[in-house]
Image (cartoon, rainbow, N blue to C red; front, side):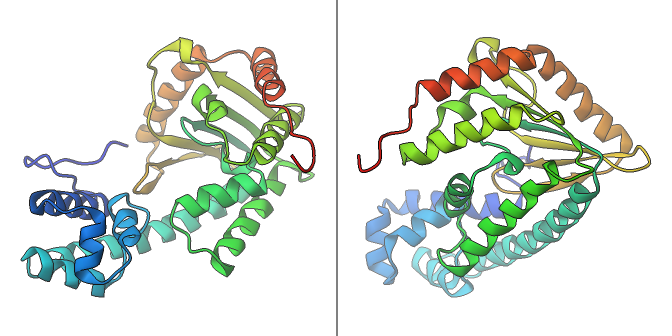
Length: 282
């Protein structure tokens, strides 16, 4: 869902507002990230990650930035709101994960990334790393957890799964060509499963519905459907029937613009063949 906006034009989503203020204050001061890092004694890349939303840093960093910019308490307050929002996001996401495991059918729209249930280990590692998950045991644990989630599509009572993949998902490759080849190959194999339907939304379709937001619909036992809507900064579990229905209408219209499943499978295969696996040792 689009972020709420106040009359100032600034975001009312805590984490995004924190990011906006960081960028604005540094721009007003006319400093580069390297200059900021040198002035405060932290590696400049930390501030780059904070301004891109990959991390919110620590309260000590927020306090130091308040002192540096002459904004006593402002950034620390925004940091506290962002931290609280992040905690709430994790709780909402845990609830979504529980419902995903119970779902009898899953419909997914991915404008930018391969859906989590279709990611290879290398792809998941890259996505989580770029999302700010610290390298080490935490990153490895989250990658393994994502690989475990994939098994829901292979279980005896696996849900019906449909994903609409924007062509951009298939064009935005991994740094390692072997890893990218394996991800594309995994998609072609997934499309052959009887419970999996993949459709590609080609660039030729132009601007369509739901262009900037990952959306997942979960049909639960008993017939109720809920939706998970996620942006770069936040995620929301949508359970109110009217709101879910409105999202579903947009999804159905989007599907009308996508290639049929067979043409989509051929499209993915063509991209795979255009990205051959390099020989060992190359």
